[in-house]
Each structure stands twice: as C-alpha cells, then as structure tokens.
Length: 168
Image (cartoon, rainbow, N blue to C red; front, side, top):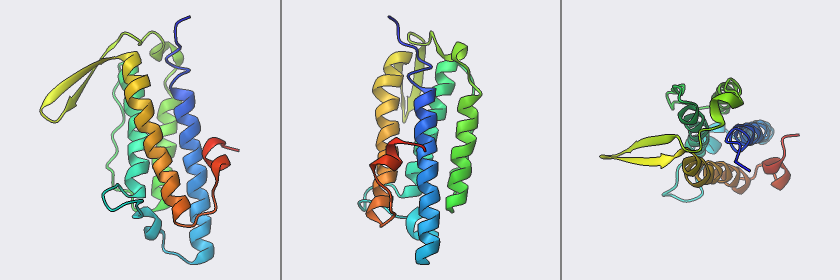
C-alpha cells in the first residue's frame, strides 16, 4: 500500500506545533508566576553551542512549512526570524499551522517521487519527496521540537511527557 504523504506530514506537524504552543502557554504562566523575565526562556540553551529556544521554535516551524510547500509545489510563507517574546513565537506557530491547514491532501499525496532540490551552501542536494519527508524533515523537525521541550523542562517549566505528546 502506498504511503499517504499528507497523512505522514501535515497532521503530525500540526499536532506537534500545537503541543509546542501549549508548552509555550505553560512557559508564559510559569514566567509570570515566578516573576522571571521571558527573555530568560527565549534565550535559554541546553549547551553553549546549541541554538536558543527561539531558534528551536523557528526551525520547527520552518521545517514544517518548507516541507509541505515543497511537496505541494507551492511557495512557503517567509518569516523574518525576529521573535523576541513568547507571544511572538506563539504567533509564528499559529501562522504556520494556518498555512499547513490550507494545504489539502490532493496537493501532497502523490509527491513521493517528486524531485525536491535544496540549495545548501554552494551546492544543490536532490531528494525524492518521500526520502525528503521521512529521512530529512521528520528527524530534523522532531529534533528541534524536542530540544525546545528540553530547554524549557531544564529551566524549570512544569511540563512532562504528556505535554510533549498530547495536545489536550
């Protein structure tokens, strides 16, 4: 049975971005209750050579929207990567989810063999749609989503596995 590229992508991206949004809500409440400036969380990292929370969220959103756009053969929305508050990161997630939900299964399904060309530094890398989704985007998307979760958990936000997995 062939894979549904739509079912393997958009519902998962939407769910995880929704989970990140809920986690950011808890972060906001935590910052307010503990009187911690939000910038502490926005700029927090797990290690000095890793991106801060803001960039982890930006990359998660970018991975999802770029993937869906490339698979659908449409232009991805562009964001400026200038979020400095939790509310601005929330807005980025909301915009990304809206974009993802604007793409229907007819635009994505059948893209398994579509050529996806990515410019990386001074070269181009070519993938099939299925390889791009399953082997490139999904691992990177979840890496950055998980790292965002880990940063906030490490910095005392009261979140757990159920916040990462569920959006309830």
